[in-house]
Length: 502
Ligand code: BG6
Image 1 (cartoon, protein in one colour):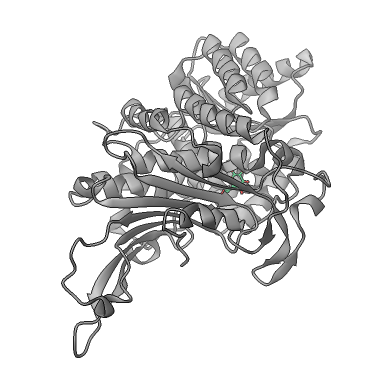
Image 2 (tube, protein in one colour):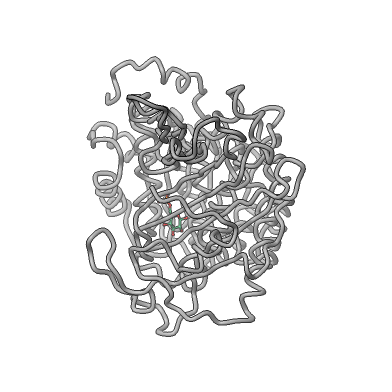
């Protein structure tokens, strides 16, 4: 077995129960998500013996492929993308319960075929009729499949539906999808994925805030000057023009990952860590978010440039992108959470592709000390305290504090107190999908988005997109490898602040 060395800090993991036996059906199994994320995550769960004892996987998609071809393709995917070394024995066990079926729901006979495969697998693997259906398909394809699953639901066994993003493309389509799901399934059977919630560092924000006595009393407008959240990517759209042209940064990242980071940063302490308590608090934040005015939302699109030393082309030159595309690849905004805790405290957020480097951070910038008794010159290198949560990479937390420079006199400079995951816990961090797939199997929806959260998120996006219809910025307006358009810097400069550079 890998990970054999005993690390007492990981003991908590072993307290979790193993999920009931079940079959995981992946719709859209020929897509990238399945090979790059889902199967490698399942493999890592298998390595740690966290999967159900009785377990099967059925990949389903329109592409023609045999069981053997599917298994071989997935084996290669694991070798390429899993965080663990490949172990033949672990793979053989996982692959033994793995099947593929070519499926088009418009074709009834095929649907019977899926049912036959599942019944047979239940008998072979002892999975008791329990099902996890993973929807890695576009939103338009979800409704029909959901109807079919509901119509063929058998009495025994539980059902859980994991729905990938995008969940709709605006408020109305998300509402329609929620209504369709609610016709057949209870909210606790539906698991809407936002993979950022599966990231250890995002969950650690909850630990940091609510497991420590020192942060919560100062986590408010009286002590915090402002918050900055950055979701920067150095990659472009990676051949996903068909999707991205419709989505843009506002639907791809802002609507989901970014707003969830805002919600986790701003939420009140939940009374317990159950799915409803946590999500009740998050939805309050989303409801309290003011719609920003047009001046407070900046959009950008990347032109050609250099990223990490490599020359890259502009968005409009990417394959499949319209030559005059007005799709944004960057958004920055100034948001306000209108409640007692946060009134008048700006949350500056930015996200974009082809930025200088990959970096997701949440920076809590505290107010300056009210009366430092040093001469101005002594504290020249002193910046206000910042609590920096490194979501990725270099996962950890860092607190910027003022310290005396050794030697004569009283010179003060900013230094950092750092906690790095890599140093404190020896085991590598699990991938977000490992945690989320396991939670769904266990029926724990705490780290999934509830229907009302999704709808609040879309309501904000719809309002922004509506005022975007009124003008056409001149795109491209930032070079690849920079930190976005100049207007994004101006957004903060107007308030006498600036984006962190680190
Ligand atoms: C996905 C977006 O949800 O998140 C992608 O569709 C983006 O465009 C990705 O690249 C970023 O995820 P991560 O985990 O690499 O930060």
